[in-house]
Length: 366
Image (cartoon, rainbow, N blue to C red):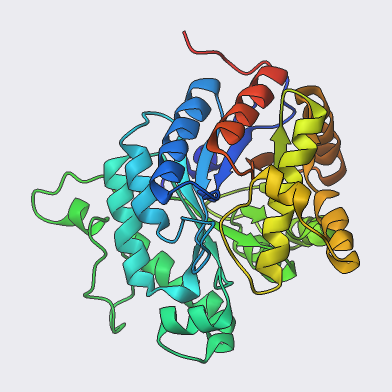
């Protein structure tokens, strides 16, 4: 790993933001919209994020969800790399048990060759989908085994990324290309640099593993808020300095939506919450419109879910969102906030990031 690994991991705060701000993109597809529309929105948002000084832009892996078009993070990241010059791009995350480690090393080695020095590899151990879909992805129904093998899979992946299997190992003569082997081949001028690895989690398992290995950690506060502080505490307590980091570095994913008026924010987050209600009850679909959500007859149980879900969505006017993010950062001590805006329309999501950037006085394009 390059000596400047920590520099790539630790971001820079701009304007009045207490910590670096980043973007998590689920490439959401609203009712009446297409995946093409959603991907075009992703390009618009990543361009805005780069122009306004956001630290990084990550894409999450999900499967078999009509309202989420991010089943292939590496493909989307290659597309975003072609439309950007400086912002860090990465996975938030790639679900390691769904893939052979060599395949991930090849994909992210290719991304590193496309966008040198600005690719992150975030890894999770959940499937990013339901059990049946995970079984189809992995060609096995032994799903628990995949999660339990995560530390071994991670170690194998890092060996492929570093091209340093020991002599006698069955994979010692196998190389992830593009990768470091090209730097050591006769006439090789390829950089030996490879993407920094992050561990993602929504509980204590990956928090402890990231700490033990001295890796950066990203916690999914946006859907597991009750576990945020315990997981971050565990990560910091478990942390051991490594060649990557000499001190812990943790970001948290946060659902945040800013609109020009508070009423509109409430309408938008209600639609996003209805989408989650349907997903959690086995009825995944496209993200509904605010009008559909307002007309929906929520059961008492669904109403309680919506209240609980939206309590962890920072939403409102730009000033309200800024205050909510500031408070969350103080409570958690997060080193970076990664914002995900869930709404029916791409224009609403784009406007949200613009409003938040303005609220913090982030740099404006020349």
